[in-house]
Amino acid sequence: MKKSPSIYAILIIVTLSIQICFSKLISESVAYQEAPMLAAEVKAGKLPAVDKRLPTSPVVVQPVDKIGDYGGIWRRSYTGLSDLSAIRKVLYDPLVRWTPDFKIAPNLCASWEISNNGAKYTFHLVKGIRWSDGTPFTADDIIFALDDVAFNKELTPSPPNWLAPSGIIPKVTKIDDFSFIMEFDKPYGLFLENLACPHGMALVTKPKRYLSKFHAKYAKPEDIEALLKEKKASSWTKLFNELSSLQQSLFVTTEMPSLLGWITVTPAPSKLFVMERNPYYWKVDTAGNQLPYIDRICSALQAEAGMILLKAVAGEIDFQAQHLGGMSNSVMLLSQQASGKYRLIPKLSTASVGLLLAPNLNHPDPVTRTILSDKRFRIALSHAINRNEINDIVFRGKATPRQAAPLKESDLYDASYESAYLKHDPQLASKMLDEMGLKVGPDGIRLRPDGQPLQMCLDVMASIQTWVDIAEIVASDMKKVKIETAIKSETRELFRQRTQTASHDIALWPGDGGLECLLEPRWYFPFSAESLNAPLYGQWYQTRGKQGEEPPELIRTQMNIFDEIVSSPTHERKKELFSKIIRANQENLWVIGLIYQPPDYYVVSNTMKNVPQKDYQSWIYPNPGPVHPEQFFFDKTR
Image 1 (cartoon, rainbow, N blue to C red):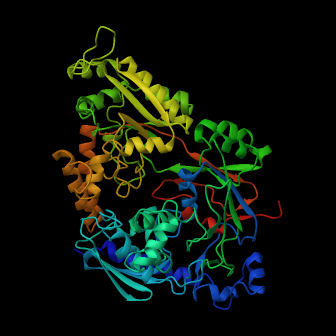
Image 2 (cartoon, rainbow, N blue to C red):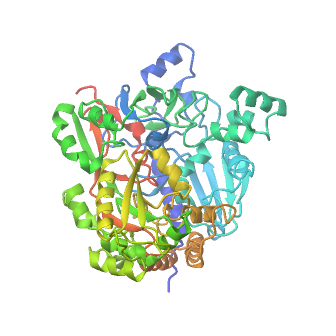
Image 3 (cartoon, rainbow, N blue to C red):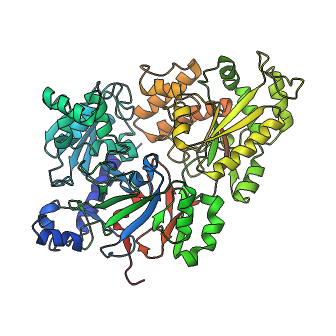
């Protein structure tokens, strides 16, 4: 029998093919062009010429429709520091990246080799890239981000799971200024995919030259002390982590050098948070024009998320999806397209369900924990919920009831789990609750084993009205089976605080990981603190037992299976192992899926061009980043 090529060989061939295509897109004889605002600075002697700022072989981006025009301001809105995740998804440039069709492609890393059965990765950076302050970007910056930050026990007590999946720190070796090796203790078949995820940005947002002055390994003790006094910080580790935070560091200061297309000139949370084109950005279009096309991104601060919808309808948003309400506001957005001079572009969700229920297995109250940990209670809740009513009222019949199972588009799809326990059957639900001993008391409310009324609270974010509407229907259904149910509608900050500390009863959150199951497994087992059904078990898994709470044997088994998936060299073996996790989910229903909702939308100004006709909606695929916002432009003829 002829032996098939390994997935690693295929990846290398595809990678090199993509890189060859990239290099052929632009002729060496083409003179590079730049934005007028930068040309003026070059003329004034404030900047080097464009060919001195670009790499010898810049990364070439193929525009979606055509070569764009320079200039313009991209208008958007935000609600404060907790709302910076949306702009993070615009500014997406990890070592390797997702293509618009969800495949791996080179980016800051020009090429790579995979050896030792998938345990050794050799990376080669694009030569000549510079940070926004003009200093060279080299392998030293990557090694600093790894050895001095991610693997520094003072700064990071437990290394990130995605960088050390077995708990053992990989060996990092510099070959030269533009090449380095990462060698793991065992095969790591999901490493490239993890590098393309948003957390992969942690390796390319730590400029060594700038951050070294805040790091105890490099700075003099007296200089550190002076900085602590100046910044009013209690320790160098706290100061360093604040200054290098992936969530905020590029947006709350003008001092941090960046590799991204736009850099901060007026920091958040200003009334107008402004980012301006990076003069050292290392990408060009196929005609040799340095990107980005758009001069500035201006985000107007809004006290309430509802105000952003009104601005969109009024035509004061150029490209945005955050806080526009999705399906619940689609009728209004559609009806106002002509007057608002915008169009709607659909985003296809990769989530298994638009919203799920996450019963807290780590509940601090032992009686409540026992109830929520009983699979009969979770299955009873699933039967108690009228998903068709949710579909009709909230989504006008356009959604699909299902559990939080892989999507049909995934080769990990399982039809039996998708349809498990979906039937709306309050009588069956009541019977199961009775069998648990949760009998109905004299006041018509079920009683806990300790004789107290059975009360549950649904935690939901207040800023998304659709979620609140769904929570109200679920609460009503739970009351019909005699469970006293309240809704805690809260800010994102409070929601995160309660759920990350396992202080909630049942949380509502989207079922991420319907398509990218192996990269976003948080709802298939307690993968991280973001697994809101068991955040402390997830923390235990991420830290290899150093933090959090040790889970029971059944859940540890799922963790062990996933560890084997991560180190498996073939996708077929990964599928075989993941099917075991799916079977365990179907039997135990650790989270309760509700519905797969219809597409959400971007609101896009009619003058903004090179925007694709559809996109994915995902955190793992940080839309719109993979479709290259740097090649969006404003059509001056309209």
